[in-house]
Length: 449
Image (cartoon, rainbow, N blue to C red; front, side):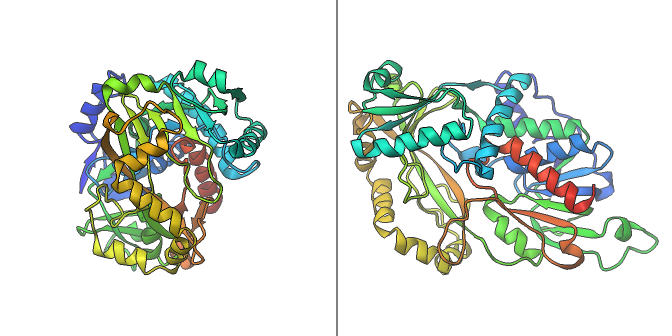
């Protein structure tokens, strides 16, 4: 178990390498291993929630527990880096409201903290006439969701914004941007620590239970009745627990006695990267018109803060929950996924699409062929294989994607003191500050903080 400010070496070096003002590292204090609130999970949702809670309740003690030796290494550190504006989501839905507010708060926060970002915009491009009604419906949806400055543009205007892109109509979203979400998450962590919070890394929560009794001569069991034990046998006591486990949210819920659903199934997305000499082909984000039958947004062109251009991703079942390469394999994760009736039903409903994704993941030329619909000048020789990410998809037993937020607690004394975020669906990074507000509200209501 390690107590850190965010890693006394590499993470601070990462922040310093960005030339930022927020890279000061300082010692943390453990409060004798007992806290009012423990947050389990050091991804962007956990960090944003920890920050929001401690700023609201500066007189309480907080700790954040992370199983890795650094923060924000998994979904947060392996995503596309897009700040989504809220176009895609059902009007009036929680996802729509949180994304629009989250994007606004993100821009304000980055501006205040000096976190680099770019409002490079996004075009959602129709290349077939049959896509135009869906594109117009997206425009109307975005208008209802109060996404700022949306407009439909024709082929000539597409070329003015993206000279190498071809399409017959596009939805222009200038409020879409890019940022390094790991830098944002680490800055949330710095705020948390500067407000007095404690970050403990190398702490993989393996058990959460109510203390059977207080140690002799101590009132700890009465004041801090919840024990969180790590896989290495270390313990932290607290009054209340919030878990934001991402790819392990279902397992964290189960160890505290909650049900097994929704189940997390990991899907890996593999990106291509444009060769640097071909970066001139893309200026901003270029996305296809999404097909409502499938849960992903399709292959897209995404500029990065480091100047590179990512193309993709595909979406295939990952054989390990944190498996970022084709050959990463974990027996428990694999058996857990393929034996689940929900995944079996999802596969049967999307068998043709799934086989296509696997094919495109193996053959670069197949991915490039899809991308050429938008930028005809692109060729297979212009791209390299790039990084991968793993997305936590929450499924129910009928094979339906759980596309909304799921809170869980359980029963009895433990259930009255724990809140699990079992699903924080995409775009959780873009919505992170708004999600944190919602989670803090829920915690205050449940636990009377």
